Image (tube, rainbow, N blue to C red; front, side, top):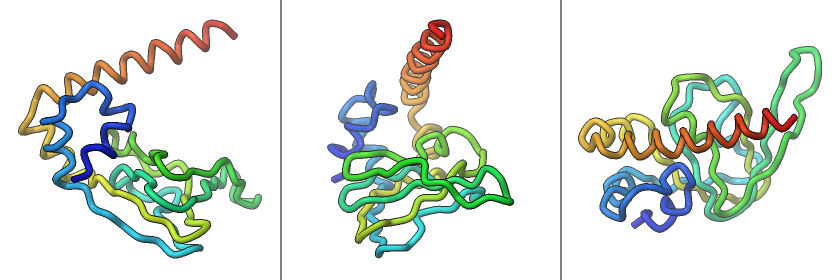
Length: 143
């Protein structure tokens, strides 16, 4: 049901339709009213979010003595928290719905269960991440 949405996530760009379908089985649609947090900075990452409707504000507090800073917004088709699927680090920012928002949540525990059952998927994800790292290193070398 959600495989078409997951297909647009760059992390999953190397996966087959069958693999996307396997991952999509655990996806859950979530609804948030304006002003509601999808997650907070410092929270344990519970999964990846794909915004399907509405708009969210991404805010970060880098200094406890200063106000939170808006570092961006996201709307339909945009992905938040994909690294939570792969690492166990806390959320680096808070995400708040600016208006009625719908998102697809891909829970970390179910995603990791799929990776254990389908060992070819992690290899494909590593390939995508490796290309990202090479690209980032190339940009750093240019500066």
